[in-house]
Image 1 (cartoon, one colour):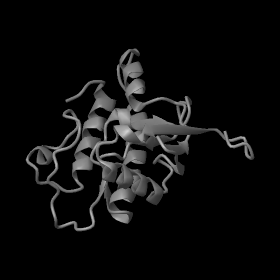
Image 2: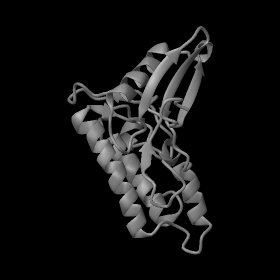
Image 3: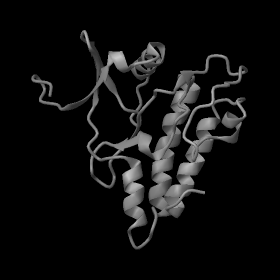
Image 4: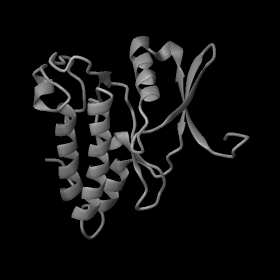
Length: 185
């Protein structure tokens, strides 16, 4: 809690000895510092001590999109309504358009576990988190080749090791399908 304002924050403490590729962690922090969007987790500060790196972010208490999908599958409808799914997908697409078009950032790990809700409210803002596999796409003509992502959500081009930022759009399509059906394609 900020003692001056009374505002609560989340702290992700990362043990430096457990980080195998420090450049990946530095890139994630650089990206989080660079983005300012209502549907992307906000990095407040970074603190470092001898053993840990502490990332202070806005606090999201509404849980993961994954948990809300599970709850919906156990409801009488079995899935999100088209209106609710459209609202969520609109927010996600807006945030990814910001990343792609304004910041030249590709997330590369969009999945329901990487979205948090600001609060438990049904109309709480959704936030994209976990930019650990993200990268800048400064040369759009240059294809990415690293095979990354979670199998259910990864674009076929990623598996072929020749892809661009549209890999995020594929993942959003899979998430949209799950929101509307209650199960993966």
